[in-house]
Length: 438
Image 1: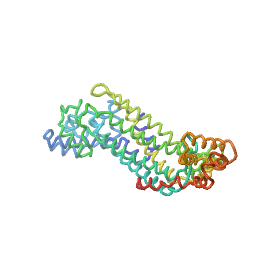
Image 2 (image 1 turned 60 degrees about the vertical axis):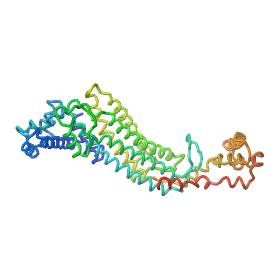
Image 3 (image 1 turned 120 degrees about the vertical axis):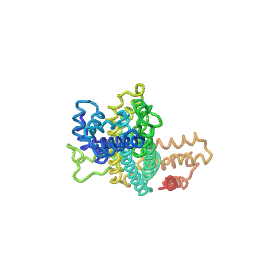
Image 4 (image 1 turned 90 degrees about the horizontal axis):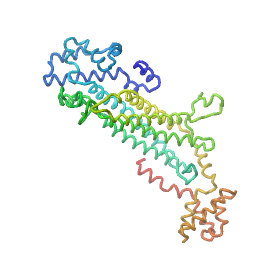
C-alpha cells in the first residue's frame, strides 16, 4: 500500500491525534530533528564545522512530495529523505547523516512515536479507570447474581463487578508504563552497533534531547523483543476490554437484560427487524481484540533476525505498530462511551436473582448443617437432594428443606429463615472497596 493511501485510511478510520503520530509528516519531522541533533553533537566534537551547522539548521528542510518522488526511484525511504534534505544544503550536504545508518534514524524515530502514542493510550486508560471507579461506587449496593459456568452461583453486586474491571484497568496502565519505558529507546551506533563511524557521545546527546534512553547495546537495530513486549501489552489491554465487553453482551441478552450498552436516538439495530437493540459496540471491541493478539504474535516473530539485522521485521512493523495503537485507542474510546452511557436495570437483576427459587443459598445451608455436627459429605448430599427437587419441581428451595425430615430435624424454621438472607453475602463489599481505595 502506498503511503498516500495508507494515510488516507488512517485519517478515515482512526482518532485524529493518534493518526497524526503515524503519518509521514510527523515521521519525517522527527527524522529531521534527529539529523540536526546529530549535527549539533558532531559540531561540538569538532567533526563538522560550526559554520556548516549554522547553515544546515537554516536550510535543512524537506518536501513530502519530493521525498516520495525520489523514493519511487531509490526504493528506500531514508535515502529519499536524506537526498531531499541534502538538495537544499549544497556543499554542506556531506555533513548530513554522517556516520549514520538508516536504522539509527528509523528506530530512534519509532521510539519518539511510541512515546507519543503511549501518552495518548495512558490518558485513555486513566479516563476509563475513572469512569469505572465512578460507576462502581454508584452500583456498590446494586445486588445481582454472580454466575460461574454461566449458571447462577451466589449473590454479588454490580458495583463489585465494575470494581474488578477498574482494578484490572489500573494494572493495565502499569503494564503500559513499563512497556513504554522499554520502547522509549534510541540508537545512533552505526551499521552493526559498534560506533565505528560515530561516537557514543553523539547517541547520548541525541537521546537526551529527545527524552529517550540510549540502547545499552544494539546491532544495526534495537532488538525487537522490546517491541514484542509493547505489542503484547497492547494485546493484553485489548483482551481486558474484550472481557468487559463480553460480560456486557451476555448481560444484554433478552433473557437476562440486566444491562444494555447505550442506544442512540435514530440508531438502527437491524435492517430487517425494527425492534432490535444489539450490543454492536461491544461486539466491535471483541473483534478488534483478536486483531491486537494477531499483531502481538507477528511482533514476537520479528524477534529472530539474521545476524546483526535483516529487513524481515520492517514491513511487518510498518503495519502492526501503527495499526495496534490506532485500534486500541479506538477501542478504549468506545469502551469509555459504553461505560459512561451504560443502561443498568436493578429490577431485572433482582428478578433474575430469585429465578432459582432460593437455590443460591445452598452453600450457606451446607455450612449450617456442618455446624450442627454433620459431616461435609452428608450435609452436601442432603442439600443437594433438596436442590435437585427444586430444579425439577414447583416448590422453593426453602420449602423443600422444610419438607425434608433430616434437614428440618437439624435446622428449625426460624433458623432456616435466618439463613436465607441476602445481606450475609454482601457484608464485605465495603471492605473490598476500601482495599481498592474506592
